[in-house]
Structures are given as structure tokens and as C-alpha cells.
Length: 450
Image (cartoon, one colour):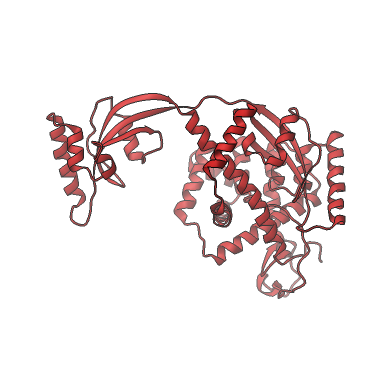
């Protein structure tokens, strides 16, 4: 139960955003108090006061308190000592501000998450937690958490992911040369199979900082490093003081190969031992501290493959679903009578690429085809021909020719190298984009106002 609740709270918390503090621009925006909070003629309650103005929107203390409760619940489930309330509040508020800015982009661009997509995401969360959807909902509500609110938090999380995909991820390109260079570097170093579990604390500096700002950040980071080396808890300090995207997760970056780690950190990660904390690492964005939590090796990547061929006929405006099914049943009878599969595929299949090769699809990995095709194919013995089956592409007859366990390590490593480069580039570009977004926005803090 505790493990499940921890995963639920983690899912509720919106996508982490880089906390970059900046002074608001000189331009003023209209006071949104009157439109944002209903005027009852009485003193505003603590719950519906404005905590911050973000461009033309507001963040209410009720929203801040709800997010704080979620973060505290997550920390309690993990057994993490609770940090100073003021520092945690500031960290959560900054995340809400940056999330709000991204939600504003979603609204301006007309982005939405439909109910089907939302329901599928929540069903996946329930499945990953090992419970049914109804059990998932019951656990939330027994613990006092509104399922309706949970759904909308997940919708917001998906919206922010889509904003980041369109604004950042879609702009990232990876060349074959970059993949070749990374693989060569990993092979030369002998570190291709090594994985590192890292934690990270960052003290940020603004764009185009002056010497005083850089020195102030250095002193703050040095003080953090000194406290860590005197025995202070890394996770707790990350939660309260890190400006990194993973601050509220205790700075946990998860497991990464050397190719996925920013180049700035690689020498440090390779040189420190498990449990050790690095010296300060300076970048254009600020000062970093890395902790190596765990380290492990990799292994060969073996996959089960099926070599198959098929005949495909599609429905269209002239040929109805019943027409195509009857035609496929006739082909099935001819195959059972001994006619050559390849010849029938060449003369009948509407998959032009495979038809020219007698219906040959080559070696197929799990997940390469749609579920209906894969499920039918997996049930066939070698040499067996299927009944006509329907998929979103049309009607198929399938024959399995062979099966094998294949060492796809080379292809897998190349695909993984591409993903690692994409991830590394994405994180670097996301940080810069979020910092620009934050710096160029109007933010007014009102949490301490009476």
C-alpha cells in the first residue's frame, strides 16, 4: 500500500521545471485580484489569497497548499526527513510558477488532452502499481485525495509534456556521425555497459551574470558542499536549496549511461566512488554538485524474433469488410489445397513492398507490428498458416516461417546511443528554454503580503 501511494503522489506532482529566480520586469500588469478571487465583502481567507501573479494569471494559496501536501506526502512515504517549511514552500511555489507559464503556452497554442488519452494514462499508472483502476481510485479516496482533482493534475502533466515536446524536443536533431562518435567513445573507454545512479544539486546564475552574481552563487554552492561533507542529508538539501529540475525528487537523476550524462559531468562521475560527493562543477548555468548513488554493469541484448510472410487485402469504398473477408477465406481454402503462398501473395496482396517478395516481412521483433497481427502470429507453429485476421490496415493471412533468439546488441546499442544523445540535448535545451521563459515573464510574489 505504501509503495503504491508513493507512486500515486509522484504521478500527481507536475512535471519538474527548472527553478530560476529573476526580478520581474519594470512593466506593470493589471491587478488580477478582482477577477481572480470572488469579492465577498470580507477579508480573504488564507486559502484563497494570491500567492503569486504569473503574467495575467494567479497562483492561489489553496493551490500552493495542495501541492505542498502532495510533496510532503511523497517525502513521508519515502521516509525522507521534512525540510524547513519556508524553503520547501518557496521551492514548490517556483515549480508552480514555471508550470503555469507552460500551461499558458498550451492555452495560447490551443493544446488539449482528450479524455481518451487521459484515461489511458491513468489506466497505465494503475497497471504499473499492480492494481485495477477501481482499486486505484479507492486507494486515493480512502486517503482523502479527490480522484477528480487527481485526473486534472495528470491532464496538466500531459499538457506540459506536450508543450515541451513541441517547443524543445521536436527541435533536437541527432546525426549518424554523432551516434558513431558516441559509440566509438564508449568502446574506447570500456564504459559502454556501465550505468550510474546519480543525484544532483544546482545553484543557478542568471543569463549574462555580473561578477557579483557569479561570486554569490559560488559562495552559496560552496556552503552547500561544506554541509554535505559534514554529513548533511543530500536529498533534503536538494529539496530545499537546489535550483535543478529534480529538486523536489531529492535531486535524483535516475540511472544513466556515460553517454547520457552531460559532458561537463562525465570526468567527475568516472572519478568518484559510490556514495561520494563531487567538488563544485561550474557551467554557464551555475554551479553543480553530483553524488554517485549506485553503479552497475550492462549485458547483452537478446530478443525473440519471428520470420513471417503475409497476404494483405484492404477495405475501400468499393470492397466492404464482408467482401474482403470472403475473398480472404477463398484464398485460405486455396492455400489449404496446396497452392504456393508466395505466388498468391504476389498476385493478391495489397502490401506492395512485401508482395513483390512473395509476402516476406523478414525478421520481426516484438512490438514491430500492431497487437492484432502480433497476437495471431505468436499463436502459430512454424509453417502454420493463420485464419484471416483483421487489423487497422485490413485483412491478413499470415504464415510463420521460422523463429530465433537474436543478439541485437549492436542495433540496440545504436538505438540507445541515439536516445541518449537526444536526452542529453533535450535536458540542456530544456534548461535554457525554461530559464528564458521564466526571465521574460512577469512574476510578482504576494505570499508574504497581508
